[in-house]
Length: 135
Image (cartoon, rainbow, N blue to C red; front, top):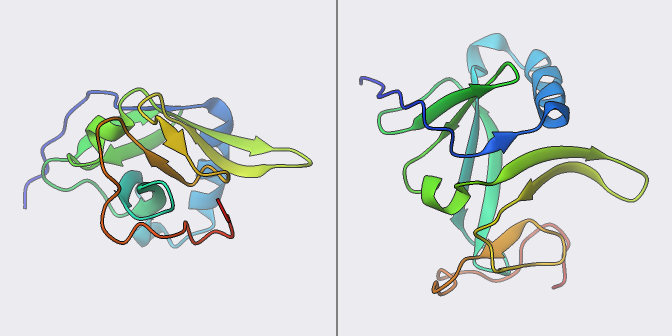
């Protein structure tokens, strides 16, 4: 299957996030890790939830771009919901981990792992974010 490469930058990866992603990529078997896949899916207490994971590469229709040495792919369904979002890595006393700041979200749960967009109903099965959040 041919990969359609698009250079449109859907979202921004901060230097802190890129550094952590590159570190985590080095800890994985090289044949399984070529890109960071950022996606959304139905679920979570606010309607959609974010997904960050490593993948072997882009597939047909993916938006593919590189920032700070990290190749990023976003599927065509997720791209409109992630347009203009920022992926950051926070390493602090009270909060540590990846954080997504999404200008398209009109509401999110207390833990920030799920969100809702304007004029959208929560997808079927959106019951709790599964990350210990009780919001």
